[in-house]
Picture: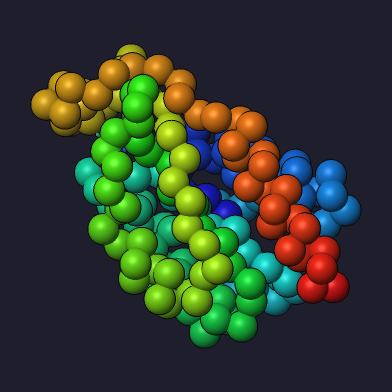
Length: 159
Ligand SMILES: Cc1cc2nc3c(=O)[nH]c(=O)nc-3n(C[C@H](O)[C@H](O)[C@H](O)COP(=O)(O)O)c2cc1C
């Protein structure tokens, strides 16, 4: 489950889903706002793109709304955002500590993201200009797949 505005975080979620499926787990990749309850889920990987230091609302809301159910499941969190080489900013999104606490997540990973200026709205362009963020796709698929393999192994050993 991943909140994504311009689609690059959704693609990270798809890549994680593919690794889990490939490892024999039944994984579905769903936008957080479409999740009503966690019936039938044995684990959750919840992610969000980061905008001005924060997780997107649908991901935060899911963590809040389903906190009791999430507490009973193994949960992994990821953020996608930092841009450039080296990726910046380095800080955790401000709300991740709260989401970790609410969900009892095992881990939070930050993955570099993707920024294409031509896809941005007017306000977003202004922020990106002010931050002097470089344009490009900084996603590291090996890193993402390795992380997902680790999750698949942990889930395997729990079954
Ligand atoms: C207006 C704007 C603000 C952003 N602010 C941050 C930020 O504070 N921290 C961060 O790590 N990334 C930030 N980013 C980078 C995005 O998180 C990155 O482009 C991400 O890959 C977008 O994911 P999406 O395609 O799923 O929406 C920002 C991007 C834009 C356009």
